[in-house]
Length: 265
Image 1 (cartoon, helix red, strand yellow):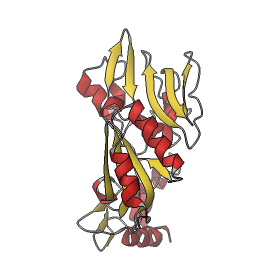
Image 2 (cartoon, one colour):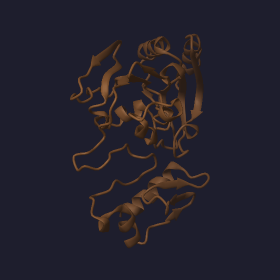
Image 3 (cartoon, helix red, strand yellow):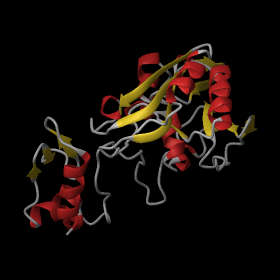
C-alpha cells in the first residue's frame, strides 16, 4: 500500500521533534473492535508544535491524513488506510482544574475526570466512553451545551479559540479542523429535549434506539427476530448488551460487514 517515496517521507517525519512514527501499522491495534489493516504511516504527536510541523510536511507532500482518537469507534477495512493516521499524544491528554473550571485536552478520556478526582459537577461525564475530541469529531458536541466555557481548535494553519456564554452551544468545526482543548464550567446540562439523560454512543454499538416504546427497543426487536446471540465466524451479537458486536478472536472487517448486512435484512 505504501507509495514509492515512503522511505523518504518516513525519514523526514522522523526528523520532527516529539513525534513517533511507524510504517505499515496494523489498525487492529488501535480500534475498539480490534479489526483493520495497516495504515501507511502511524504518527503520534506529543504537542501542538509537533502537530503543526507534521501537518506542514504532509501537506507539502500531498499526503492524505486523518486524526484517530483513542477508543474511537472506527471500522477499518482489511486493506488498511492510505496516507497518515495521526494520534494526539501526552500534551493533549491533560486534565487540570483552573479555578472552578475544568480544562480537558482533546485526547483526554472522559473516564479521566473520575480518576482526576474532579468535583461532582462533572462526575457523570466520567461514565462517558471515548475522548473529548471524538465527541466533536462524531458531531455529538451538543451534549456539552451549557457546560462549555471555551473551545480551542486548529483550523488550517491557524489556532482558533472561542469563549462561550452559559447559553451558547458548541462551535461548528469543519471536518479538517482538529480540536485541541476545551474548558468546562461548573454545572451539568446533559438532558435531552425528551428529559432523558444523554450520553455519547458506545463503541461497537450497531443500532440506536428507534423510539422510547419498550416494545420497540433494540433488545425486543432483536429477540422478536431471533437474532440475539447471532454469530458469524469470530463475530458475535452480544446478548448482555443488545445491539453491541463483540469480536471473539480473529474476525475480519469483511466478515463483520457480512454479519451486519444479514442482521439489517
